[in-house]
Image 1 (cartoon, rainbow, N blue to C red):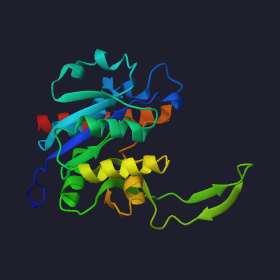
Image 2 (tube, helix red, strand yellow):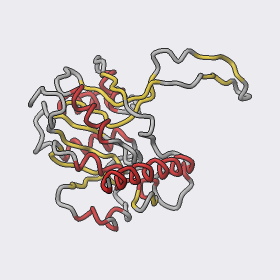
Image 3 (cartoon, rainbow, N blue to C red):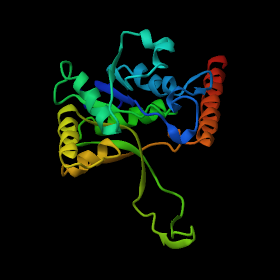
Image 4 (tube, rainbow, N blue to C red):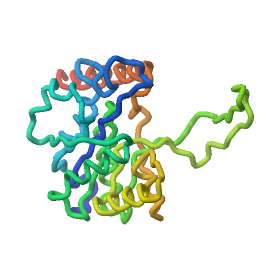
Length: 246
């Protein structure tokens, strides 16, 4: 693996997509909602799959998923499919298990949310460049800029919190195959419901590195997020089309 900044780092991708997205109140899981002419998950996969260092992508689906087969990219040979579990960590573990015959323990694996459609190519490259020689790995994240308030039971301000050194975790999260597999297995044995891969690695005694990512790399959680993502993607599309005509 080259240590030259900007070089193509070889990596594998796992995309947990077994969630139902019930908080959206939609008629289908949020990763399959229409967005700027595609679905959310198609946008989420695009930047990762088009990177020259991507060796393969495993999408982890619910066993009863009826939407994935309707997508044009479902027939592409570079995409492998496996079934996930009830929790995110279960799905990521299933994705890692599906890669077992292809991955060495030292290979990089990038885990990316199916509901993050606005990952920028430059953020992905920054993550790869900054972590390619890191002993632990890390994740894209954005420093918090808002003032934080802790509420009481009546939703009145109980305390103003310091935002110093606080970051908003994003994905992709990038770790070596062996380390990530062991960390997730250990969290399961300890009955800790980790909310992301970094937390599992932290519980194993490591300190993942935070790599600055753009705030546009949002996760679709409510309808307003979908509207914001559409604006972001339309602006990017317009910029690309403008660049081609100049």
